[in-house]
Image 1 (cartoon, rainbow, N blue to C red):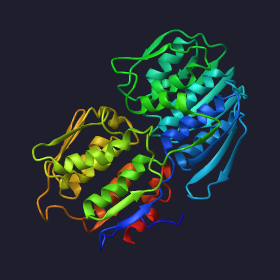
Image 2 (image 1 turned 90 degrees about the vertical axis):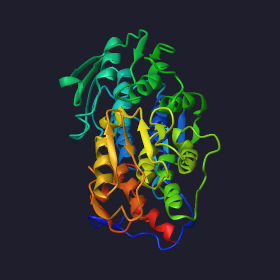
Image 3 (image 1 turned 90 degrees about the horizontal axis):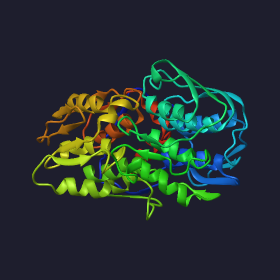
Image 4 (image 1 turned 45 degrees about the vertical axis):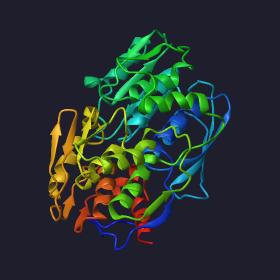
Length: 401
């Protein structure tokens, strides 16, 4: 990828877009599929797998754990790869390893659970922000299964020592992250604990937990990763704000991703005549809720995002960051404990600004969409998009025709 100027100026579109965009593979599916491939008894090939910071740390960690992983180019998309993993049937080859997960929450949580199928000592660490993000619910569950975990304040870095798992029924809270439950669900069969993981106060089938459960039944040794529909939301939002038509190549017919609903919610929100229009971060949308929030000043009734408290515990406090940066461009937005409200903007109310991204890829990409409509927006630290979408800005230029 070419080096990007910092801040990166986003020029408004001079005409409505009319194009088809290929977006890279789903990060959430890629990292789950890598775990399932490692647990398989067969050699598995993942096609269309995302190749970005969050998935590279997962592959690097599998190498460190002794798995045979081969990475080959993808013929259709430069930010995808074909990844072949030799499954070890639930065994971890290495008895000692040190894993670095950066700020990848999925990798941190899934690998912490995965190493507990081994027999030895494993160190897991990340960057400064990952060391602030919650891990306690997962640590508590694994300790109930006989794992020794040494971690200050129940955060990374952690030393995980395993001799023999002793599975017992556990119930996991999803208040801080659904990734804790997904991590345990991914390993429960290999741990001999099928059906012993339950959720506290929520149904088994919603959001990213539904993705995990469905993958367990659909995964096979030759598996194609869906395009990332969170990433697709930026291009669909651009078409909504600027007019025109953008199609996403290979949009899945029966997607595993909760953000498959983004087009429907964007359409409904744009037709609401009273409000603000209400969307739940847990029940309705995943990461594309941020895209909808940035579109909200142009929605006739605005937007109220609810059930979003755990967004404060992600790459940054995304609730606070969204409200702060929407205010920076002149929008009226207000924080709530578990979400935010954004009101419709009057003509001429919004203006350009340099957008702080807080080293959060989704802040950078969401506000880039706004820059296609509002003149004068520049994105600070644009390189943070490498976390999940390294060629995002190149794809954004395709909207210019």
